[in-house]
Amino acid sequence: MGEQLKNAIDWLFEPTRYFAGSVLLLVAIFLGRKWFSKTIVIVAIFALGTVFMLWAPSDPDFRTIITKPDNVPIVILLGSVVFFTWLAMRQAVINDERVKEGKPTLEAELGKKKVFTWPDLVYIEFICMILFTAFLIIWSLKVQAPIEEPAATARTPNPSKAPWYFLGLQEMLVYFDPWIAGVVLPGFIIVGLCAIPYLDPNPRGNGYYTFNERPFAWVFFMVGFILFWVSFVILGTFLRGPNWSFFGPFEYWDLHKLEPLVNVDLSTYFWNFVGKPKPTNPLVREAPGILSLLGFFLLVPPILGKTVLRGLVKSMGMARYNLFMHLLLWFALLPIKMLLRWTINLKYIVGIPEWFFNV
Amino acid sequence: MQKLFDAIRRSQIWRSIFRHGYPDTPRNRTLAVLSNTFLHLHPVKVRRSGIRLSYTWCMGGLTFFLFLIETITGLLLMFYYHPTADKAYQDIWALREHVPLGIMREMHRWAAHLMVITVWLHMYRVFLTGSYKPPREFNWNVGVILLVLTLLLSFTGYLLPWDQLAVWAITVGSNMARATPFLGHEGPGASLLSFGGLNLVHAGDDARFGLLAGRFVGEGALLRFYVLHCVGLPLAASVLMAVHFYRVRKDGGISGPL
Image (cartoon, rainbow over all chains, first blue to last red; front, side):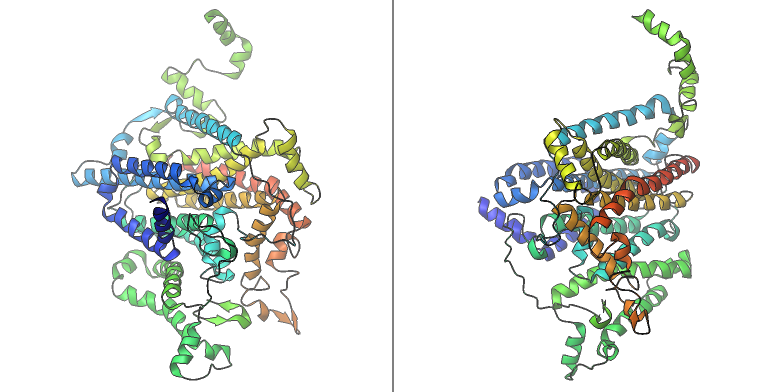
């Protein structure tokens, strides 16, 4: 029974299923948010999580990963993101319900009353500080900070991992070259975050939790934060072993596990399909990929702007709309590349290793 | 006992510090906030809706608190640490072996991890409550930069123990820099920047070299990261935090319905 369950979990956590499962889970949360925001749901999630965390470490392979001192924060991250997503959704559902009934939001009703900073606010801050200090001291007494063998530039550990909060970026390296996964996309994440207040044309939902008044914003941010950041960090920490190969939570990190490299460039597909040898000029050789990328970035925004997103163009104006669409398309490149990798083993859309220009 | 307390409260020393009575009347509660250097970051009165834990999650405050813990524990750690390749590792090892009940490094490390989590959650909360909307657009931007600074602080600190974990994590992280378009020697476009057949961007002068002060993670990188970790980044973060807190106040306090 135990072994079968472990095998089932290992099977379920394989990257494509893990990703597809996360997407389905998020969709379920959005659509069934009334149900998800019930108290019993969060109690059940944490009860199941506790049972799992009591049972699973009996497995030696699971224990090896989970008891690494630096992995404790990832468990805290997972628990707190689940809890706070639930808490936010709960308040959004309550507020949306109240607005539907013609009542003011919780924040509007409570906000009418002002209270003294001393004692109401300073006490909350003080108690938070004391509890956090106690928590930190207990944690520090229980778990020693890691120190491994002295630095040796000649001995590369396998796997070599970046600090845990950058593992989402390292996971992207599976699908993109470092110049995109490590430089361009992180740069666009920062630029995109900074641009959010100037790109969001929706004046509603300022200062209170609501889903119905800003559904796109909530879905967009939760997909970005939960699906492409937190879940990638968890994937990179717990499920990526030697050679960045995938390992299930109960799988032994075997150094010799090899995943066959059968990935093919788009140009190879194209010239095979045409039945001609690959041209030597890289620009001609990669023309199909370059044209599809140009089409993606130059044609998609105007086409959508003239059709389904006409309302958005109107409310944002041309400049903002174009900036928004280009940031969005860069973001969309990641799931597109992931799907292409999983379905047709695509390596590069444009592959010009001569110039380090691989997309 | 009561007499003793009263005597203390009436003494010139006490009254020179606290210019008001016990904060149990509206007047004294107002004065308690107004006359205190640190508390006066807060307004005297706040909206009841804004200070509930279920609304703010207290994540911004905790991030700041963790920054203070990092400053104090980090200062203590600096007394025992030399940022040189032959001493760094031994110093960290000595901290663990020779200090009974020494948990400063543990507190420093776990609080750093927690700070990354709390700052993410703070951003998550601010987004979900729409608190970046006018008039708080600028402060959201300051917050994004503070978030990046938090990650950089943690990243530079990660190298300092100078063990295998540290060096290779920084190697993996900083390897990205050599793929920077135009500025990294393995980045797209870098090969276009040449002069008379000589490459202008190569492993000895590209973005990664600037970050690490060398072609690999070595002594130069250790010193550079140490200075950034202990002086440069905290200084930048402190200035931006001052701006961040001031703007929270000036943009209308903790957000709430308009």
